[in-house]
Amino acid sequence: FDYNLLTGLHVVVTAGPTREAIDPVRYITNQSSGKMGYAIAEAAAEAGARVTLISGPVNLPTPTRVKRIDVVRAEDMYNASMAVVDEGCDVFIATAAVADYRPSVTAEHKIKKSTEEIHLTLVKNPDIVAAVSAHAKRPFTVGFAAETRDVVAYAQAKLDNKKLDMIATNDVSGENVGFNSDNNALTVIWPGGHKVLPLAAKRQIAKQLIELIAIRHKRD
Ligand code: C5P
Image (cartoon, rainbow, N blue to C red; front, side, top):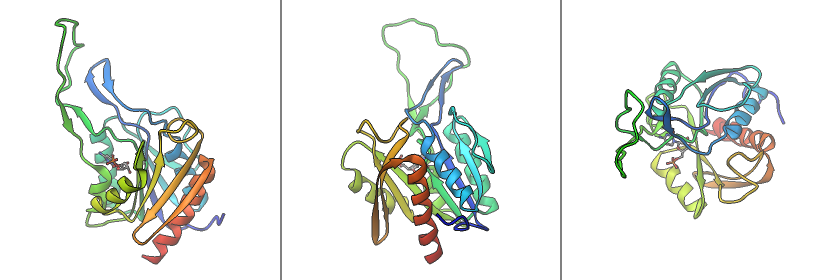
């Protein structure tokens, strides 16, 4: 591993889940532990980059030499991401499992138990990585795709639709990979090529991904 791969570059990583409040005590979220994103932020810092980690609520220590910005809602993550991209960054890696939808309203007070059925209306959250790749000061943009089936086909479609430079895909249906696990296996796809990173510790996978990003970023 080359400890100067990303020297002089500003790398931004989003990580973890987002949390969308229903009322002051309840929320919608997902299974993301943040481990993959934190490992990537750590690997980028080890490769010499200046790293900003925009993190949803997780239970993980901040990696050394990484600047961490804590957010809760997808909209907060969007605003924090736009602010760093406005300032200018070189690489943006979106590992966060952003909630696709949020409650249309957050109740001011705890919702009381009443009728047999109540209905929650959800509205779409902004797509952060798509907004980053469409930005005038567009960094090299990397997305993630966690899928339980047709992993590569969905990822290829996301690479195209969100106009990404690279997408890392993982199958989260297995027991030893993906969410909460300390291990992961990725298929990394870019326009015109791909590479399989077989099952390994997330820290190892993160270093291999950083190497691929450094190579592709240099070519562009
Ligand atoms: O469309 P989907 O959520 O499957 O795409 C996953 C990729 O898009 C991940 O890189 C994720 O961080 C990013 N994403 C985002 N903002 C959203 C939804 C997903 O940045 N609102």
